[in-house]
Structure formats: structure tokens, C-alpha cells
Amino acid sequence: MVYQHPLAYVLGLEGLALLRSWGGDFDREFVLERIAEVRRFVNDPALADHPGVEVAQRDAVIGYETWAATYDEEPNGLFAIDEPAVDAILETLSVGDALDAACGTGRFSARLTARGYRVIGVDSSPAMLEVARAKVPEADFHLGALDALPVADESVDLVLCALALSHVPDLATVMTEFARVVRPGGHVVIDDVSHETVFRGSVPKALGPNGEPGLTRSYRHTPGDFLRAALGAGLEVRRCDEPALDTSVSRMQEAPPPDTIELGPWQNWPWTLMPLIPAAAKAAWTIPPLIIWDFERS
Image 1 (cartoon, rainbow, N blue to C red):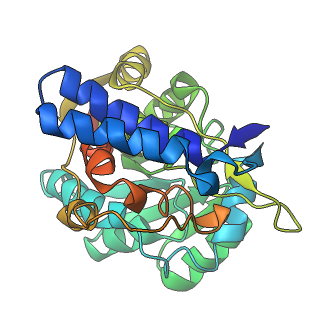
Image 2: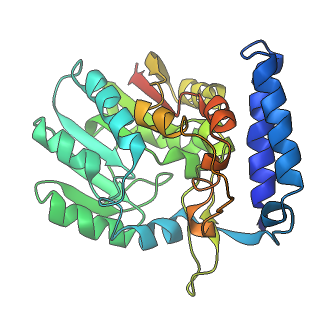
């Protein structure tokens, strides 16, 4: 079980902000403001006396099954960042057969189809696939896992995998599968959440059958982890991008701190905790939220 305490998260972001100050990013006033905030929160009963929440870690299939019905409707700032970056890579490639690996509700299957690709979509969530089939009837969708793709050897020109590998414990096995199904000269495009983003608490919820708190099991894969797995599978790097944080998020974090502490329900953590410390949150979250790779099978 994971134990999440709102004071721990608030102090954690204050600490990250202070470490940036230690390295020279901010001045004396910023540091003293952070220390004053820490003193305030440590002594505020709303935070200090909170019992915290015990949270289960659950398989990604469980998390995304419950998310399928609303996945396309809920605002997700990452979509506005990853779609232009992935499109920039796709514009350099020839159209052909594409595998949308961990296709979810077909977000990228639709984009690939619109570009003229013949699309195969694979996902481990039946509920996600049901939405994808209705959204992209031109594509061919299959139930399957990333480490055992139901796709023939050397059968596609492109493998695209978006926002999924942070839920995979072993990148090497998955990269080997991607290299197996892509033709020589084909490309593997990876669009994933940065390990720094996961570290700061951006993890999808996976509630229990009665609404019990739960998180989708996630892993912090560094750029080196991706690189070692890809090179070991016979893939060569053609491009690596780390798109900047969306400016709307930065503006949200510039609002003044509230006079009273409102934590919000656990389901909305950590997002409702960040406005308590806008300056520290902005400093701690000024990171590239995604990493996007273009690999080629030699």
C-alpha cells in the first residue's frame, strides 16, 4: 500500500523548489517565502492533523477499464503537447502500415488513419477497444499485451506507442516486440510521460470496486532506460524531443495562494494541493512533462 499525506506532498514540492534555489535559480526572497510557507503548513491543523490516505496500486488494465468511458471527455493537458510533437515526426515518414500499440480509445489511430495509414490497434483493455472501434471503424483492433503483440513479424512500417510505457516494468521486452513487428527501415515512435512527471505524482487513478483509493502502477523510466532498451533491440535513434510544459499550466500556478486551506477530495490530488503553494509548485513543475522518441530499425 502507498500512504499519501497532503502535508507530505506540499512539503515535497517546497523541497524541490528550495533545491532549485540552492542551485542558483531563485533569490533570497524566494527562499525565505518558501521557509515561511513550510512553517505555516507544519502548524496548520488542516494539513498537520490530516490522517492521510492508504492507496492500493493496481494493474493498468484495471485503471484504464474504469477510465474508458470518460477518457476522451476529460481535459488532459498532455494531449496538446504530445500531438504536435508526434505529428512533426510523422510528417517526415512515408505512409504505410501502422501499429498503434496501447491504442486506448483510438486517439492516435484516428490521426494515423487521417494521414492515410492502414492501422492496426492493440490494447489490453476491452473497454478502451470498444470505444476505439466505434471511433475509428477503418482500423483493425485487437486485444493484446505490449510484451506479446498479436502482430506478425515485420508486418508494419510504423509502431506508435503513446502514454503507455510508464506502466510497463520491463522496457527491454516491449522494445524487442516493437522491433520484431516493424519492417527494416521502419520507425518506432514512443510518446511517454517523463520520469520526472511521474515522480511529481502524475499517476492515473485506479479506484477499487467500491471506490477505494487506488493508483495505476507506474514506473519512472529515465531517458537512459529507453535508450538501452531500444539499442538492445536493434533500434537506432533518429530523434528525441522533450516538449515544454503547456503555458496554461504555468499560468494556473501563478495565481496567489489562498487564505484558507482547501484540500479537495483524494481523487483530485495532487492537483488541488498545488494551488496552496503556487510559487513552489511552479518551480517544482517547470520540467518537460513528456519524452518523445523516433527510433528506426536498421
